Length: 131
Image (cartoon, rainbow, N blue to C red; front, side):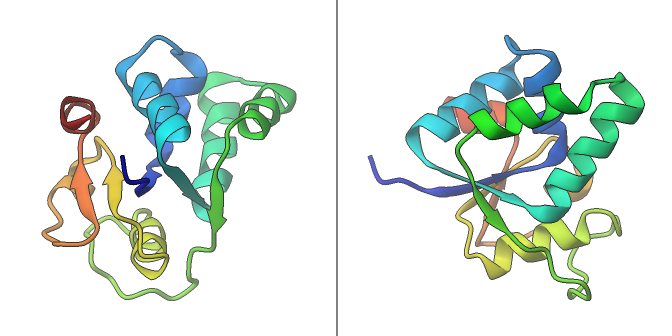
């Protein structure tokens, strides 16, 4: 099996932390064990914020999860080209393109509407069905 560079969006990280038996968690752990997981600094900042604000997670829980997850950290550009309709998703998509990521895993309709040959954008179900 060839290791692919795969970026997951923030919702996949949130699901894996709070619902460890969920399909997003299965996908994340499969990626971490079989491919090269890629996260942007923007993903991680958003993950920390959402986990604390919406799920009342404590900082140690959040940090332990990240510390145990093998990933490559990439930087999201400050002024990226707009290729996606949701402004919050622009830095993540552009970081993935600049880092030459092979696949983006997301359930966000804004990502799923993007028409690119590379990176390929897949849902969790599409990814799990393809493995």
